[in-house]
Image 1 (tube, each protein chain N blue to C red):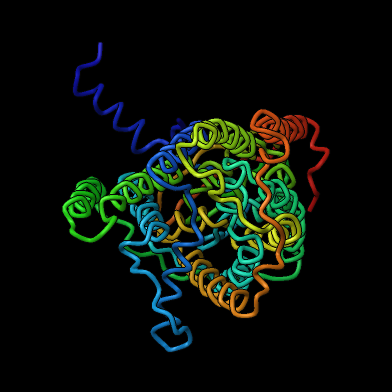
Image 2 (image 1 turned 180 degrees about the vertical axis):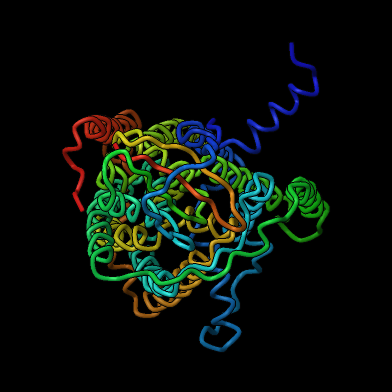
Length: 386
Length: 85
């Protein structure tokens, strides 16, 4: 019989050190996305990183209007929370280290980030705001972005196969700071709680809301890192190796989140128009295609790049910086020229199909994807050979 | 929740792939390509720095029929061992 101490160690290892299954991660992510909307607004990624890069363009005089304070801007605080949560998970599991990739990978990160910025500007969001949270929020652009993402992923994968035959990555750079003691991760948890209290006691308007964004965002980052949940993997692996575990986890995560968020909208606890953006159909379809191809080359989507930044992967730092800066510039240009009104229509599925019909459509789309990739896992029918 | 499998000592390696610094999915793609260079029963060693390879390489081995022998921590990188089917 094990002692209490051994049992505590076992639970600690299961929670902080061992990798969670993709399905555990997918279910936890759906819960946290529901918590985020219950707190106030849907979960997103691009708004936060765009806010950070808007400040750079404002500082150098390219943008005239001062962007919102990143410490009191919901999207930014969510992203800061995600980074903190993923960093805590990485440090506690001894998986944090700055890892310098070969030069070729840095170039790929830079160029892929530019295309991710363009795609996400066209679709009004990355794989999170434009697809995952869009479907939770019963927005038609989530479905068209999914089609675009799948088509784009195939193109991105074909590029990687071409690269394998024609380019060599060269030597990697150094890996450093890989020995941070896990206790720093535990201290990080206390630091987050202290920041949440600081928001709670702040006199700044709506500062209390930031505490929730920070803590729920950090939960999302922790879940992502612990389960290595990755939407690039979910879309890419059925075509690369046939593996479907991540794809099935994301399908279930979308379904669970859709129920939770649809309930809040139906009961008028939250506005129906939340995350229904004017990108149906072509903005989300074309944006999804560009984003899908680029995220495969980058090795991370919006969320996946951010949690890998917190793990210390320098390539993904380059991806996030070029992704955010391109998105800032393109979004600014769209707004200045009025092109932002030409990307499509905001289509809220319940306006056409009712709540029942809309939930049915989203569940059907996810189940079809689930069944096809599950079948493909055995048959390898859609696996593209090298 | 998965445990890390530690490779046994004294493995006779037929070929080594240096995938240090590469991030997902490049270590796995290069592993798929490099394993074609060795014979059935021989061992491929992969040097990597991406923690994601801890899931990707064993998962691919079980799907492709190769035997995943485990990993060993080195200074700043991980050595993975795969026996070709």
